[in-house]
Image (cartoon, rainbow, N blue to C red; front, side):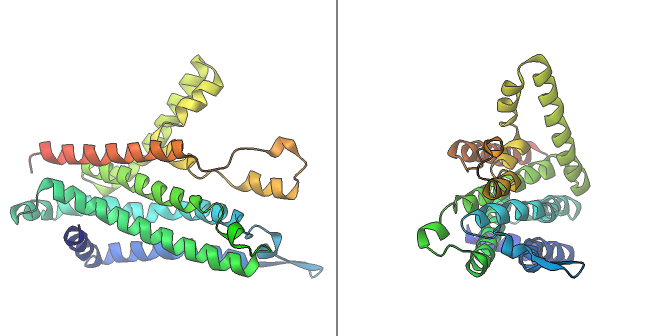
Length: 274
């Protein structure tokens, strides 16, 4: 495992574009630190500091930071599809196989890299959330601080699932631009299918089926926190209540898609004439 991971990291770090994209994908999530310190002056009458609104209190901070940080995954998605595109364009995939790397090891090297960077991103966002929370949170009890840290697990699984999908598209199309374009096409297709199901059947049934779609299932791992923030401000308004928790069933669905994407990537490579 370490040998395959080291081999892939060497390829990425020797590529200037990949190094820049990796740097950006890890730095941008830390904009939450900037967000927490923003102060808005209302014409000199009073100053509003976002960190003082309570949105960085424990345990809600785990929810908020992982939700926003997940949107920066597209930068590393470019790295993932480029890993495959560059292998084909530079003919390094054939050279790796000639040098003794099996097709299974080739796919595993990509998957290990995905896990490595997803884990690193999770550790970084957890540290950022922890220290922001310690600074702003009104709650310092240990049981409250570490409550809802399952959002970190959901964030990790979400990254691994999404990057595995990018890996599959990269293997399928061999071109980085086409692979990224297919992500957008998949998004459109999911909503078209949802629209057809809701037209033919009940909306509730359509939403349940939609939750099994690849992109939708990944999004559902961490639901939007805005409604939850409103609940904390207006706790007596029952109309705002909704289920924002992380559920094991949602994690299982994304893990199943991840396994399928990796398996299909391997089957593509195994059957393809290089």
